[in-house]
Image 1: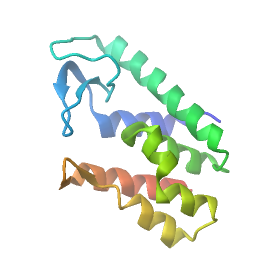
Image 2 (image 1 turned 120 degrees about the vertical axis):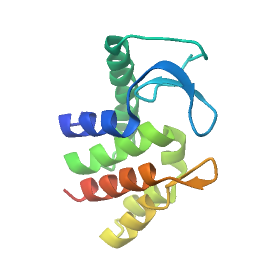
Image 3 (image 1 turned 30 degrees about the vertical axis):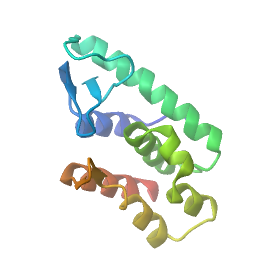
Image 4 (image 1 turned 180 degrees about the horizontal axis):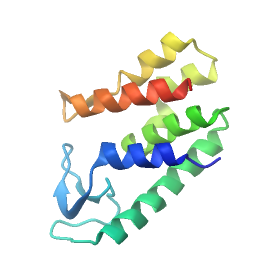
Length: 141
């Protein structure tokens, strides 16, 4: 499966676009739409480059979610790719969210697991609350 255009636009919205490297809330050098690989403070990129990084990072998350073989609908796939894009593939693999999805958990149980992931740097962030709410909703579309 591949993510939908809806998901790509939401990722852009959630991540925001920064053309100069910055430290994210966890202190990781980041650029573009949340790209972190090989980024050093002082780096600058174009909007075109940011879009290319976004697509590369999405492809990695898509492959990881496809490898899990748990997404049965486009909505489920988009939600899990967004989650993996934001938190990392390793966190998705080891999450209770994935265990609940694999076990065929209820809408309530799956939604609850998405909404647990709203902290960064030890702080609850409204942007992550909005993102997890969208992911939980999208999962059931």
